[in-house]
Image (tube, rainbow, N blue to C red; front, side, top):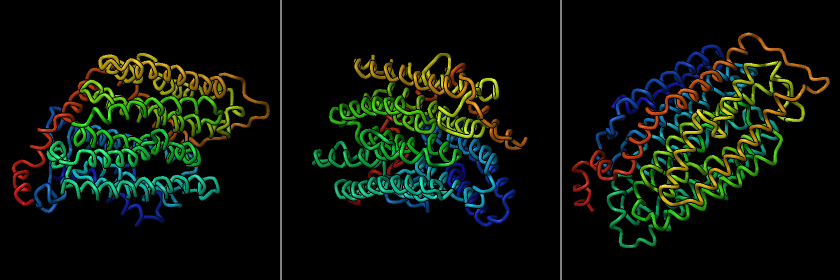
Length: 504
């Protein structure tokens, strides 16, 4: 039980301690980095415990499912918790770099760990209502982080972000109420057991569409993605990096969890919807990136385009497609967060995010150039980096399912992604520095805090790319566990399913 609850206790205690230590900045940072490292360690332990397909369950307050609150960790949840821990550690270190004192005085540490509490809570939630609760925790903390510097641009972006997310969570809560009225339960395992037997499948499908709208807004799916490039580019780089790495992936996680467990029997209806949404998300996102010359906006639009690759797994709902989506999620979290960290370093070196005002970094900061090339080429799918294997798995799953048009769009979007990365490289690194450009001075501590997490995430990308087999095998295990509804139901409910049926 302690191992399952630890991903919640660690960020909760860290948020409380850093709030109490609000006048002791150095102590806050020690607590923050220690908590993030502990979260990573717990995530890796959970991966080891679930790598054979085991499902870990604990019932809070000894109330048996489906009546109580169940916390559930399968291979998919464990992977997401481990990668969340890696992101938390990387961003915690990076946040000690330039402008750290101002961020910490504004409350970065408590808000950051509150955000991680919401993220981890969503990954272990065993019922739909508590998934909603953790979404709300994330929304509150993420808004505070987004407007941390209190600039006009941040307030404007934050209002757009909150407005659309409030609409999404309102739809989410309405869907939760309707689902409970329809099936009399909100526990994922119980829903998976009862959904195929529901008399009114039309109403159940309509509720599913409401969930798709709500989770789609969180994941920035087409046509609900405009808030993301309007908000993310205003955030400070540590905040933008954790947002880019994790927030949209929580929405993708919720989609995979709900539609693989509860709506798997209705794939003929939802499959084509997800296919078209995935295609439109990829295309509109990549064209938005191609049209901009601000690094933050380019990377923000690429968050959108890459989400489409993950949704292909839900559209096809085969084991190969789900495994490809999970592998792609892991790759993208690492790469996209790293690119935002690199963008912050570019801004520090050149004084601007605008590509027209940048240049000469290949000579002035060769380590930063390498730190950009690895995640950029990985995002574009260049072998042997992690993005190549992720895209290869997604395209192969599409071809095996005879969804050739989806596979073709995925390849086309990969080419345009390469164009965007080459554009950043040419403008920021390869071309000569503009006349009159004054390089910003770094302290030794700032440079170490900035470059260390970039190097860590580059090493992770290289490891996944060069040593892919164990990661692919783990993704296969997670996909098989996610699609095996009987095993999930048995692990969570046991004999409680019969008791619940009797109670009804």
